[in-house]
Image (cartoon, rainbow, N blue to C red; front, side, top):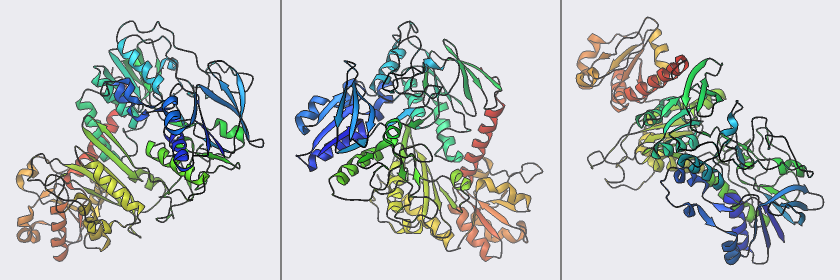
Length: 621
């Protein structure tokens, strides 16, 4: 059997090497348009920032090493320009010689990846992207002052027109012409300033690493927060960390034009937001699945543009498969889906999924197994020592989908508080209130966040309920966790809410409840109260919560807390609030606990103020 794989890196090379391990008889050909077939694309920002010091550390395998170890025929700088699915052939152009030839196949695996998106704006042709080693070479050259005039958006990147080539030129085969090489006149001195367009995972990583290189960095994000997969009260901590390290974060803002060394900013509606220095510009807005070859082959695409595949990664064309960022994934958390997942297609451009796709498609081609597990979108990013991680749905998306949910916030330490080095994290769990199944989770903190989100992701995959988290037996020693692990604590809260032992209110729901006559009671100590307390706005202005410490609550409640109207109790993180809610409910009060306590309310209100400040900042230069 001859298998032709179009595109290397994560999915393509995982498929190729797995195929060889399973079959010594298979003929395996990998066609890669770029210079490198196997490189650590997730490490590119860290090489740009000097964290990874040696460029060679990014290059994992070469055509020669793959031929020696796996007997795989790897051809770099070979672009597939056409697919004849009926004849089982592809047309290949050797980019070194310019000559075309036809390659036959028994099975074809498309692994073209995704193209970085560059927003349309005057001057944007000098923006750099970060997709491959050539891209990071350009960024490093720009930082060091040897970069080019008219920075290209990079080979295969969508230009503002949406064409593969900004000039619109194409060769006779119909394949897009490669973008021109950069000229050498733009920067004659090392870059001192940078604008990063896009506040997602890659944008945040690029911003951090440019700071490491000593640049003054402005991070521009069109939405009202960084890291869209997080909810605002979680993402605000990431923004604070960026700003604490000197990054000028501009949310609700876009780049409207680029000058030779500046960027003009506007709001989404075009209101001017000033000008910032921009010796270097990196576009990290997102990616678009590269479906060109799939369309040429006659394959169907999904509603969001990816190559539509079934659970075994087959396209709609016989003997043609698609994997990696270009292919759709099955949404494991779609409405109505159970633990086994759903058939609703989604796009999740993550390296771990691409590697899983590669392994799985090899198994399917050789008849070993069927059924790719649905995806839930587990991701993590580091920001100047802070970790942010997420899995599944966030609250914003659940509201947009009209799905019921229950939110839980906690603020535990990553390990036993009495052990040196304990630091607090913020965790959020989203739960289906009817089934108690986990819909998503988020975490932000210095240490231990990735471990907890991974546990929750595993629980989702196993179909565990939120309450089941309480009974997970997790590794414990004072240096690594707590006897009641943060994941267990999420389960305890979920179980209390499921059983109706307590009710909660979210930070963004508090004002409405107060407007209906609710009394807010701070059950912390007077000292804690004095340092900052919840100040709800019931429509007549803000006012501080009534302070009745938990240890005095039994004696003072009847005299100081009104009956006949709802009561909301709060503490610092929600734990003492739960005890207070249980006490007051047994005294006859209609009581709710402020979920996540003062800390979650504070973060939510800060996120709201920052969003409003961005919208009003029309001339901050």
